[in-house]
Image 1 (cartoon, rainbow, N blue to C red):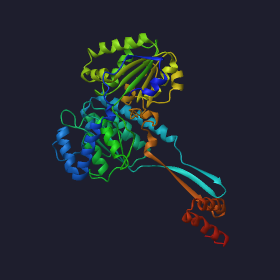
Image 2 (cartoon, one colour; image 1 turned 90 degrees about the vertical axis):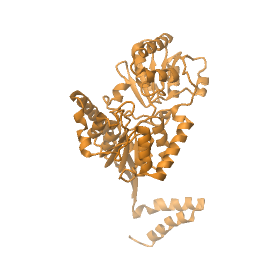
Image 3 (tube, rainbow, N blue to C red; image 1 turned 30 degrees about the horizontal axis):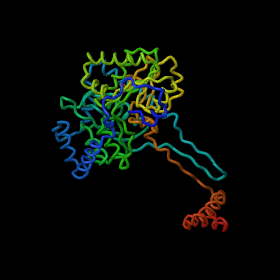
Image 4 (spheres, rainbow, N blue to C red; image 1 turned 135 degrees about the horizontal axis):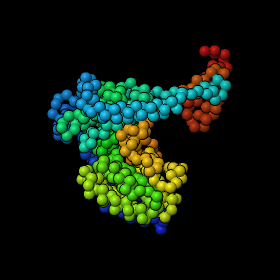
Length: 443
């Protein structure tokens, strides 16, 4: 998540970097070493099948059991290991995410129109038949991932949804992640992490046919595996590593801004965090406050390097410049903490999801409490793509129905165009129908 040199050139003299990233290394999503390693792993798994999956599960995740699937009873009972208040919070997140997905689904209706007498066209939304969801649960058990992937797929009407999650530090599947998947309606759960999980679902190595689509956020290796598997299966988008950006002015609270930046930097040592501010004083205060919070943060060994190496603070001379800079970054998560949040909401175009006002924070969506989906485009993908939603699991399939009487309306024009193009077989499909029409064929 970096500014493009072209946009910085266009805005020369209208901004100032108060803190720049400490490294000029490529973004994690563009690391050639990651791409090479993923390619090798996918090739080996495709060649050697499930044996290779188990080797990687053992070597990378420490999983030594021959069976990677959790039994249905184990999935149903996972919540029993949780405190009542934890279960209640997960149930709340699952329910809110489901309601938001159902709202989206209700806005997608089948439709039909008669474009001309006897020419009827339309479309209907049909769900994909199988989805594989990746649920991050390595360093941190990200419980809400199941709401956003499994739950939203089920709200779209997908018949079969399987999920993979890596084992935790204790070598077991995290009970909260499994329970979240259960609440979301998952059909089968496998304890597999990373590239090997995506490959197993995509290649049909888990006792199911290959899935039609793989979804879910993850680290750079997961994102790269999805990129390389795209075409063989559909994907939601290239999501991960997580990133956050904030636009703030002099009215913002530097303590809250710093906390929100570090909140996403905590996802990983290569997670970018950026502030664009119209106040030099606020920018300086946020840098100072971030250092202060890192001194006592229990996850400073993660958030600290991320903030040092990939964090930035940029002063913009006016709000128009702030918008131009932020649209160039196209961040995954974007917070607005200003005296005129509506201006920014109306003006900004490139972001995965926006969080408006001091009382909004990305963590509310991350944990499923806001209902919106947090599987979002990263690495500038928000310039052209939106986040995961119920619509991604639905295929708007078109159809057309032509009556006998409408034949001249279509066939004569197709004859003319096909003759010009030199496509005789195309022309014949129209000509034959015209001949039958003129010959009185009533079929």
